[in-house]
Image (tube, rainbow, N blue to C red; front, side, top):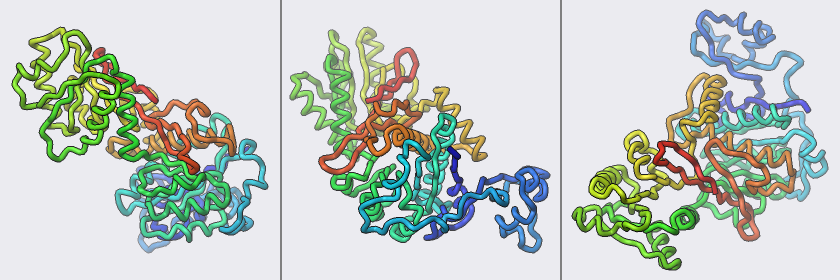
Length: 460
């Protein structure tokens, strides 16, 4: 089946799409101009006439225009090879319809998976730049799936924060989608969810949202887990990992800490399970500090803050304790923020057998990580942005998982991890139904810095 992947997003890096759907402007690729390249040479190398290239890049008509190294220009499809004009697609059912084009269409397991992306795809601010990178990851996932026999038809719309997503949904191509990835903003969730529910389209909400639409709308797949949900999950995984250890909770005297919810839930769980734990203070004397540690059980330390400064003091205290008591077994259970401190604290992470709970992690030493980085650089001529969460990797994992699931199971796909059998590069996914509503991701992982100076991830 012909692969119809279209790089719509990349257009938005260069132009303002405003409220116009970017999916209606179709280009084959983008090209970064190299030294000594000419308009004629670029056109020839891409099977184009010079006029076709200029038509796709109207700025070339400006008086005195010069093709400069580093400029990024659009590469159109050669005449006769362009995909079908989206505006020529037969109109789909209206917003009140209860059937979809897909319901009367070929089973999605026997054709390309139709993917829509409705995110702020622009270069105007941080949201847009992050979502540009995320979408590039989606495209890379589609390329990888194509190599494994899974075809995709991808259409993207620039849905900025001030956009009315209902106008975007008037594009007939929106109703043809099997899955729509988005939106980013809370106010856009309900209209998109209602639209998708009426047509049997799945919506993958990739990032945080404060809305509760997922509790009532079976079309929604929400990746984000709120703080209370995550605290419960982290506490349960702590218990599973350390139920035979002696827990020591250390008060770090941080009045700004937001970790009280976790430590309170953890104490309740320990008390319910009859596990005796100790509480000490970072300012306590060495003698009083030492008394809280068991000499017969492995110890696990939990701080009540995630800040680097207090973590540094805790490591100093624990190192002094270990010097005087080398046979003490000490592990630590941290917070997702600690993943940002590896450059400063990596040696101590290894030494104290640190476990960090998180909803994402990309191992910098992994061969898969390196391949993804190199592929991103090769495709887009730049590196991923320097955020702890790599948005291209997030887009890759989410798109690969969901598209492959739809390819294998069609409308029966529920997002359970065992259905796909995909090992994530960064972001694990495992969806469970929320009451009578949609699906919410329940996957978490523990990043373990072993005493053998290895980094392993434990997925749940």
